[in-house]
Length: 382
Image (cartoon, rainbow, N blue to C red; front, side, top):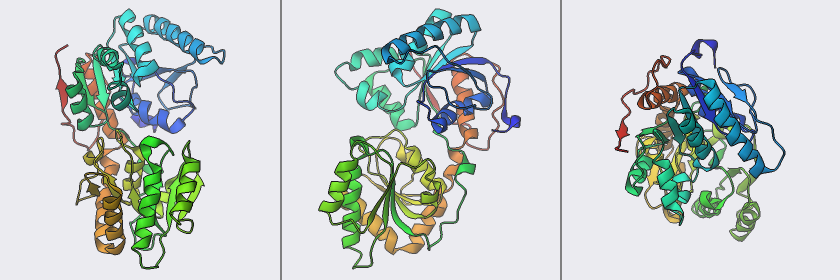
């Protein structure tokens, strides 16, 4: 972030821990620094983020005790620091810590819903407790309108539910022209875990290859995780060894995006996957199921092919058709790059300004942007 985008806005305490993931920390807290002056309390601090101060409580290496110390540290910091609000990401444990700290300091609190807060925790057997806790926040932010509707259907009633853009830094994903000579036919990026369903991608590749009339299909699965062995077994079972490459986890997947023709999403559940946004920003035509909030950035027939049921056969047909119809694929890929503006840091900063204002925090920075500033928030009765 350049110095021009920094602000001396209201002081905000952020309770979070991104386990050393520099990119995730920057995406979630960096845009906030454009409209406020955040101080982040975390156990595993990231490297420096422009405009963000970091406070690290002492640790002993035993997670339950470290979390208790973090809570005490955050409470003391929130009271001592005279912050305008306490913000957090993920209800357990950091949202709960922020809620306690904010209540004791007498300032509004924010919860950024990420991961399984809705799909896993809010709908579990202990869901009533989760929904009650969510309803105690002044503002709950979600990655899209679908998540907002799900919270409403679950009866979650915080002061406000607002959309917060899941941003990328466009400079990290240069706008490479979606040319016909890209070498990767099908690309998958993510964690090899059950909710991402990497096994389905192997099945999709096998079916696309079977329909390719012996021309060969090159597919790459970027990532790693607990299902790695299962993925390798499925590749052998589907005789896809010659088609699927497994480079493992890479810090910079950009080179794979820039060389890919079609990005395939196979997740069972999602908020708004960052890999989808990154692929679209890099000029890759997406084939995606209608899960979570993906349709807010992937518009069927305009910037993506959206498969409503997410079935293997339908995903395979859509991918096959795009690989055969070069003109259509290139048109979708070109339109997809518009996500560079709608999912930018500037757009997220505008959302943060609106979120803080809804919480009653005034005098935020300007957060100038060319993106749509009319994104709605839903006011709910506490």
